[in-house]
Image 1: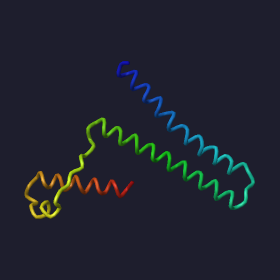
Image 2 (image 1 turned 60 degrees about the vertical axis):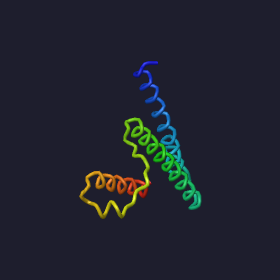
Image 3 (image 1 turned 90 degrees about the vertical axis):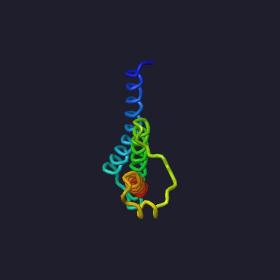
Image 4 (image 1 turned 30 degrees about the vertical axis):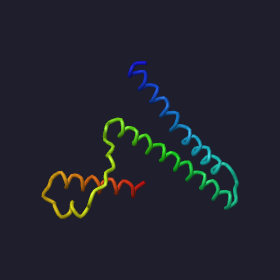
Length: 111
């Protein structure tokens, strides 16, 4: 299989994986708009919508992680002494490592 075939197959899989949760979200929204529901049913529909959105976000984040890994952008995990990094700010390598650690920690907090 050539690289263009692999890319096409990957794009087809991504499109399918994104389409499914979006179709479910749309179905929930249509049910909400067209039906007569009590408050608990609306809450259940809203909860289902949130769950589908979470699935979609997880899928997108996973695809982004895979793209970073394939591009060689994934940082390796390494134990470092933060005190040394802070005490020796002159070293450009140490400053780079410190920024990398801070960026990695910020990314963990966001997910």
